[in-house]
Every structure is written in structure tokens, then in C-alpha cells.
Figure 1: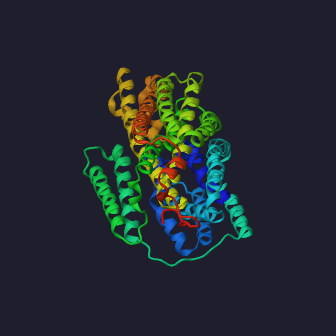
Figure 2: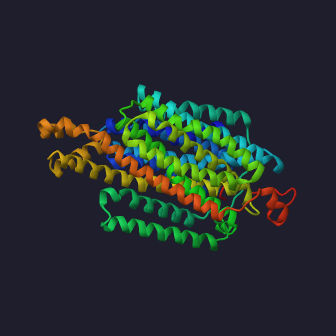
Figure 3: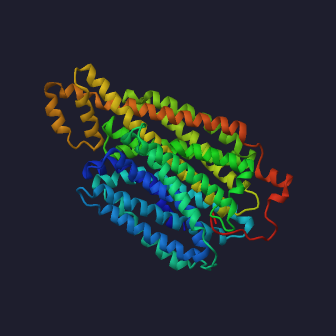
Length: 515
């Protein structure tokens, strides 16, 4: 099961490295580039609860196999994206399908792991499962860098042999597959998919449509209304996708808020840092992968420290400290971005990674353990939905900020050189298309072309700095939430004080996440 879900973890970072090459080769628009990343995250978050419910009904092993096949097939078709006018729609559609495959596979794999261990051993098993699978996220930057040097399409094709091995191991392991027919909340599924999709669409397209556009605000408002309707629906139906009453547990609710805020910068960070390193630092894909690997140096060490703090004192000390460290790290990293020098950045990259490492494991584990009268699977389904939706929203909002800020920066720089705003906008637009059309714009600038284009790396760095300051602000908000909202003490202490929240001896929890 670790082998099966490894693809979904690696995919969160590997595509970010290759995205400049993908954009250049396929001529993707700036928002199209973001949808290549965000389509996957949005599909995964919107369908995760449905995948958990379906795994309960159709059988866990069956859904793992179906999910792996869908994921691998969509990966192959992403790698086979044709050049030309259809390229952008093609790769976005199959990235969305790839996310759907992950949403079917992940909850079922998780349920199999849960079902394979007795209640008193599940915590340890889940810790190993997420430690190994989550650690594979760090493989993405290195693998993505070297595979991109060969061919960017290889970052998708590499999933095929991994999927075949996962299918072989599943066949050898023969995990349980017991269908349990039950109603499926299709209305809830449509509401959450529509709500998330429209809200993110409006936010991400705001850079293109403009904040004065009816389409921008219409998508956001309708999306939020659908999400509100989803919550009402889940409170009323007998077999909901997500039992939202679980959020009545204050500790569980606050830790999910922290996780939501954390993921706004965490996964989008890999996209923004990768493009910055290739545009502003002029790194190739391999060096961009090494640039991101610096982050994991701090993350890996701090994750171990955070786990020990969790075991000794509970999640609160580690999460509060991590939020403060990450906020400071992002702010100092942002401040150094316009220097265009790695030597001035790497200490703050490590510090940022350390801050996030102190938060992620303890907050996620403690949220699952604190969920009252529920299973590891259901609580994990909720936290995964919250986490992926946070990443999707973060990429949408900050991606729009980056586009608009970069355009404004180029306009200011060109204005100082006496170049018209129309030509500045043409340069910004050509850069947003991966550089296509830059040559024609350069010819129109004549002798000023060299000076004008020399400003582009610095202008992009300034736009990236704005985004990283936003990340610092989000982590500062997470610090306030964790400081004021998270309870002190370990889950064991809570269980002793309130045994009614624990499972009864011998009780078997629901196996599927978010069922």
C-alpha cells in the first residue's frame, strides 16, 4: 500500500520542477501552468471523501487496483500530451483524472493498512505508513530535475513501472476485499466538487478575468454557497460523505484549521520556488531540484524532533513553535529573494523547512488521535480533504498575485527605460506563455532589448518575494490559531480524563477514510 500511494506523494513535487519546460514546450498560458498543478490537487481534495465511501461499498482491494490503473493511465496520457492548440486542455484534463485516481486509491490503501492491524497497534502502523510515504515527497525534486533533463514527459511515465509493481505487490499480498453495499451521497459529492471547483476557478482566473469581472465573483460566490449547502446536506443525510459533527471536538477542529493554513504555502511552495530558481537564478531543472532539496534538510530533522515532542508533551508545543519558526523563515527567505544569490537564502530555506517539519506530523497525527468516537480512517479522510483544499486555494490565490505583481514590476522597470506600457505588457504576456513570442517583442524594443530583459529576473524575484511574504503572513496567522486554540497535553491525558471519547474495547472502527 505504501508503494501504491507513493506515486501520489511524489507527484505533489515532481511536476513543479518540470513545469517551466512543460510550459515552454507546450506553450501553456500562465493560468494553464497553474491548472496543471492545481487540477490534480483540486480533484484529489474534492473526491477524497467520495473515494473513501466507495472503498467501503465496493471493497478496498478492488478500489486500490482501480485507482492505481486510473492514475497510471492518466499519467501515461499526460506524458503523451500533443503539441499544438489542444495541449493545454489535454494535460489539464488528464491531470484532473490523475487526481481522481489518487482519490480512489489513497483512502482504500489506508483502510487496508488500518484493517491489517489490531486497534492497539494502528497508531504505530499509521506512523510508519505516513513516515515512509510522506518522506517520498522529497524524492520529487531530485527525480523531477534529472528526468526533466532527459525529457519532461518522463516525470509522468515514471509512474507506470511504479504502478505495475504496486499492482504486483497487491496481488501477492491479497488484502481483504469485502464489499458492503450502502447508499452513496451523490448529492453531497456534487456539492463539494462544484463548490471547491468554482471557488478555486474564480480565485485562480482572477489574474486573467480581473477582480472587477462578474465571472470572477460569480464563481467565488456560487462556489462558497455550494460549500455551505454541502455542510447543511451532510448534517441532514443518514449516510454522509463527511460527518461534519466531528468538528464539534474543539481540538480536532483547531488542528484542522492549522493544517489548512499550513498547506496554503506548503505544496504551492514547490511550484513557486522551482519557477523562481529557473527564471531568476537561471538554474536548469536538476539544480532547481537541488534548490528545493535544501528545504528538506530542515524538514527531515525537525520532523523527528516534532514527533518526539508529540510523544512527550503533546502536539501544542511543537505546532506553536513550528508556526513561529516557519513564519520567520518565510519572511527572511522572501527578503533575500531579490539578491539572486543562493548563499544568502539557504539558511532561511532550511529554517522554513524546519518550521513546517515541526508542524505537519504532530498536527496531523494529533488531529486523527483526538477525533472523538471515530476511526483513524475517517479522521484521516477529513484531514486529507482539508489539506489538499488548502493547497489548492493557496496556489490559486498566490498564483494570481504572482502574475499581477510580475506584470506590474515589468511595467515599472520598462517605464524607467522609456519603454511603453503596451510593450511591457507584451513582454509579461510572452513570459507567461513560457517565453513564446519573446523574440518578436525583443525585436520591437531595438537597442533597449538587452537592458529591458536584464530586468526580468529581478522583477520576477520581486513578485516572488510578495508571494513569500504572504506565506509568512499565513504562518503567522497559524501561530495565533495554534497558540490560542490548541489544547495542552497528550491525547493519552485526554483519554484518561474523558474515556467516553475513546473506542470501546474491541470495537472495530470504520475502515474507510471519510466514509
